[in-house]
Length: 157
View (tube, rainbow, N blue to C red):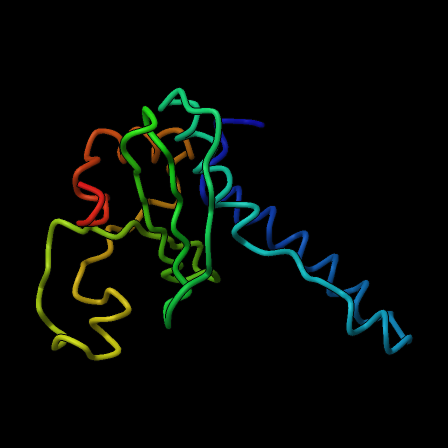
């Protein structure tokens, strides 16, 4: 895996794979083949690369990417640290077409949505810190590690 690829590069790879898959899908005529066809998922091109960089910098053997969850289709990355602590980092797809993703800042609660509302339940009271699309996955991983308390779920602290 190249570590010098930017978020823009990773999204460009996703877009190329998606365009190729779309051509393959459009050429299908068999009903069962159409129903079983799967398109590439941006998670596999962008979020997995971020998780791999974090795994390497955290000196961990594994991680888990869950989701997408909620109205915003957010993707949590979970690391088990030292068999005692769990680190959760949540990636938000701000704009897939615009190559924009962000990380949820759990240290801030703007109370914009009342308790129990869809907005509150989906985590919209916590701001999203946008990732510069020109950043590499390794740079983003270093930013996360340098500001780790911002990105942990409150229950994981």
